[in-house]
Length: 233
Image (cartoon, rainbow, N blue to C red; front, side, top):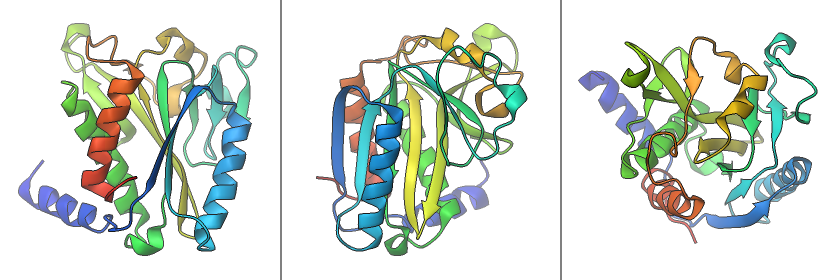
């Protein structure tokens, strides 16, 4: 990354911090996807109306596929394998399942610069910093969404996706968020073209021999969130 790009990124991320603490909640076990969507809608509406503080909600889902607003039907390779949910977020098809940490992020961009591009950049940097603390080098790509890991063990130029990003913003309140592969069954991704990207694979912290329990990942996420977005409680 050149100096101009790096300086621009630093300035962009500076818009995102808020002095007000964000609620940080972790739900144990598997959370039904439609239940999660309903809760996101309810919480984001209360945030918009000033009746509730911002929230980061960490969950695990049973095996399922989600379709974003740009999803192409031909990218659903195995329609009958797992339930398919129309998510309302941006992006294409993604997989969620046990061993993957999903963080639903409900922030008020009215107090964070009203800049959706800055927000997505902040999510990317949050993931990259979290992975770095676990010994994994994650990188962004200009032509691909998500966070990527170089895989020289698979051949020259090989890269795998380790984290996905999908957002929706309504009334300047964010919904949906990020998903990081801790130790999911990677074969489950074969039922879709993840995020519409071909020619690359998916990986996980476990496959990379990095710390991959959810409590360890959650602690790293919480620590690094505060550097980008401000304090949590």
